[in-house]
Every structure is written in structure tokens, then in C-alpha cells.
Image (cartoon, rainbow, N blue to C red; front, side):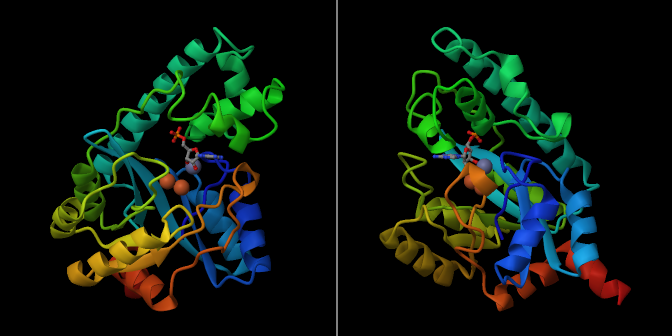
Length: 282
Ligand code: AMP
Ligand code: ZN
Ligand code: FE
Ligand code: FE
């Protein structure tokens, strides 16, 4: 329920994702590239051809008073203009921010903005991020892999780091809900990503705005956070999901290392406007 392809910072195409999901013995797979639905068409074609279950989604970048929050949005109406505008502005902000970071990095390391763009697989259809800067540094021989680059120049603690200006979590959840989607907070307990996490009160406020679930089963949520999130999900009647946050060769995360129960997947499909449309068509 949480996979990245070449349409953001994953290294595989939607077709390759599907083939690997089938090989891993999964019942289905979700495409959730950062701030875009550009990969959906290819993913849908690949799923049809293989008769394999596919959930269409996006991992949306948000900000909460300096806390970086990711919202997984499933099954929303792609023609919704508010959501499309939100993606356009975040993608532009990401480009400007990456370009600025590269200006700073290039004072000390032999990479240019062109070197970064050379790592972007689908041109303007790809959402650009730090992993593409990491790939340029790898190509220049500075690092062996993305993990090394993220421990160095690409780290959020590095002197070159700049945050991506992003919409508030409230706005993202409300926009996803208005577009008929299902909203799940990705890796809400990932203490490695943020010095401060979303508080119980904050998650409770989001739940009252229509938040659907929490991605509890994720490698970056430590055991005590999983416990806290499970309890919170019970209290607030939120869905509990699991996701691999698979990035192909871009991260050690294995496809299917964390999964979501079939019942929860069915609920997500039934709640989304896409799910309702497909029911109407039957
Ligand atoms: P950005 O969205 O541009 O801030 O970049 C963050 C992205 O980089 C996230 O989607 C992560 O999946 C990815 N990332 C973070 N840490 C690592 C790492 N150690 N190795 C590879 N990718 C990473
Ligand atoms: Zn990513
Ligand atoms: Fe994320
Ligand atoms: Fe992700």
C-alpha cells in the first residue's frame, strides 16, 4: 500500500513494480508516488494486462509547524482541480528547493543541476526530490549508494538541507476528502525523520476532519510508537494500514515487507470515490 516508482524517487517502472509484486506473492499493490498521479495510467495498463489488483494513490507532502508529514491518499478523483493545483505547487516548490540545495552543494562537490536532471527518469512527469541529488552524487563517485548520500550531504541535518514549502496537514486531508479519497498518515511514528512527531491531539483533530487511517506497520515506526498508534487508532476509529515504502533499488525496503489486511484494503476501496464508481459500474 506504499510504493514509489520512476514517477517520483523509486527506481522501477510501474510495470516492474507489478511484476515484482506478483513474484512476491502479494494479492495486490498500490502506487503512491510523491505529489503526483502521473504514474497511474501506466500502472493501470500494467495491472489490466496482468489481471493484478492495483490501488491508485499518492503520498502527499505536508507540513505541520516545521514537522514534515506525509499523507497517503487513495482512490481520489484525479480530475479534482483543488488537488491538482496542490500537486502543481508542491512539485514546483520541490524543484526550486532541490535547485537551491544543488547551488549550495556545488560549492563543495562536483555536481551541477544538469547532473541532477540527468537522474530524473520521466522528465517533467517525475516528482524531483533529494534522492535524485543523491543519485547525481553517486554518479560523480562521491557516494556508493543513496543510503550513504542520505547519511551525508542529503541528510536533513546537513548544512545543505532545505525544507520543501508544503501545505498544512489539515489542508491536505480536507482536500483529499473533498476529492473523494481516503487519507492515511504515512509512518506517523518515524522518529528518525522528525525530531518532533504529530501529537495525539493533532491526530485527533485530523480524525475529526475526516482522516481515515494511520500507517502503523512501517519499518520506520519503532515498537513503542506502533503501540501508541494502535491504541490511538482504536480510540479514534481509524483504519490501521501497513506499507513497505518500497523505492526499488533506491532503499533497502523490500516490496511486501509490511502489508495491509484484506479487510482494511476492502474498506479503503469501498470508501473511495473510485471504489464507489467501480461498484456502480457493476
Ligand atoms: P525529499 O522528499 O526530497 O525530502 O526526499 C526524501 C525522500 O528520500 C523520501 O521519500 C525517502 O524515501 C527518501 N529517503 C530518505 N532517506 C533515505 C535513505 N537513507 N536512502 C534512500 N532514500 C531515502
Ligand atoms: Zn520517496
Ligand atoms: Fe514518506
Ligand atoms: Fe514513501
